[in-house]
Image (cartoon, rainbow over all chains, first blue to last red; front, side, top):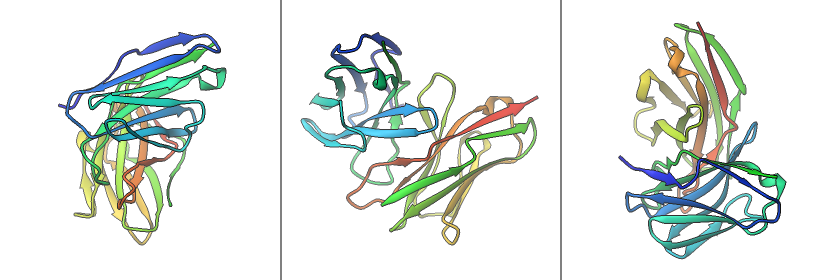
Length: 114
Length: 114
């Protein structure tokens, strides 16, 4: 089975802090994704990566950056956390750049910015 | 451009009753369609997917969905609801080609009453 692991289930940070959310997948998938999930808004794509060191902006990249130095790891970075970034963050991966491929999700990180 | 509309942010059924969760999509090309389920405090799990083979797709846990091109719909059904079906359900579309990103609906919360 594909396993996507997010390093923290819950995080509490202060406004202005630099925050790292880590995601690791164990199935040699090419694609990795970061979403945020908010009530009533569904999932919105922040960034995705289709290869090591390659990234593309999603629908809501403002205030975020990403890093993919190794194929299995995809990090989401909040350079200066703000209260409006309080949310559930979900990481996903998929095998190759095919539209019909399934995305596999981690359990999520619930981030609170105070 | 692609989009997904899920009618009803909250659906409540009695145990043993029919479950019907509605999803309509917009896509300029033949789409790939997915239903995901999210149990409390967990990530998303694939229920089923449509990839242009059979229009009636069977998934896990007794769920199925029918692709209707004329209605641009992909509604999710289950003949008899079980308490364990209580969760949030997301419909997603991927229009393929060079775009392999999923666009999600806002989700439908299913409540099952005893």
